[in-house]
Length: 387
Ligand code: ADP
Image: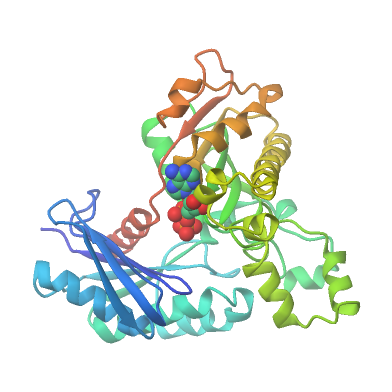
C-alpha cells in the first residue's frame, strides 16, 4: 500500500479536502465544508460511499478540519496521512514548485499576507490546523503562482519604475494548479497538441486564461492579484486604474471600501445586479443578466485574441472549471466570435460536453477538459515525498 495523501484547499469560507490512498488513482473520498463561521454544510463523496450532505456549524478552519476528519475516520478508521498537501494561493517570487512547509518557509508565506489578503490568511489557517491534527505528517505547500514562474520577464513586469519589480510588484498569475493539471492531461492524452500553442480558459467562480507553449505558462490574464483579467463571479477583472483614483479622491472611498467593491460587489454580480452564479444568469430573462454574460464572453474573446498574438497563433483552445466544463451556451457564444482565428465548433458535440467540441474541419481544436486541483496537489506531494 502506498502512503496516503490528504489534500486541503482552504478558501475564505470553505475547506475542500480529498484523501488519495493510491498514487495516480481517484481519491477514496473528496468533500468540502461550506460557510465556515456560521451555519454551514459538510458534503462528501467517494466511489465506496453514499453521498454525505449534512448541516454543521463551525467557527473556523480548525473546527472545519476536525469535522472533515471525523467524517473520514467514521468511514475509514484512524487516518495517518504521510503528507498533507495544501493549496496556497501565493508563493511570491521564491516558490516555483511544491515545497516542504518548514518554519522558515511558513514565515515567508506569512510575509506574503498583504499580497493576497483575501486568500493567504485562510491558507495559513489550513496549515496550522493540519499541523495540529497531524504532527507527524509532512506538510507540503503547492502554489497557485508556481506554474507561472516560467513566464518571460516581459510578461511579468508592469510599466512602473523598475524598483517596484524588485520589491515583488509584478504579475504572478493564479489558478496554476489547475493549469498544471491541464498541461499534464494534454501531455498524456493529446500528444499532438501538448508541444504546441494552447490557450486555456479556466472559467469558474474565479476566472482566468493562460497561454501555454510547450506545456509551460508564458502569459496569464491574472496579474499581481486575483483581480485582473476576466470579470469573475464577484471580482471586477481588468479595470482602468484611473477609476480607482477617482473613487479615492471624489467618492472618498478608503482602501477597505475599494477592496470590498472590487472583490465582492463587482464582476457578474455587479454588472447583472442579480447573481454571481452563471446558472442563475443563464436562467434569468433580465437584460442586465444578458449584459453580464455578454461582457464575460466578450472579455474571453478579447483575451484569447491577445494570447493568439503572444503565442503567434493558436493550436488549441481548452475550456475548464465550473462554467467552462458545464455551460455549452457560454462556450458557443465565445467560439462564435472566434471564427476569424480558425475556431469552428461542432454544436452537437458541444451540447453533450464532449472532450473535443470543435468541428472536424476546424484548424484550431477546441477541448473541454475537467480540472482537478486536488489531484495535482496529491501528485506533487507524492513526488516530493519520493524525491
Ligand atoms: P470555484 O472557482 O468556486 O471553484 P467552480 O469552478 O465550481 O468555481 O465554478 C462555479 C461556476 O460554474 C458558477 O458560476 C456556476 O454557476 C457555474 N456552473 C456550474 N455548473 C454550471 C452549468 N451547468 N451551467 C452553467 N454554469 C455552471
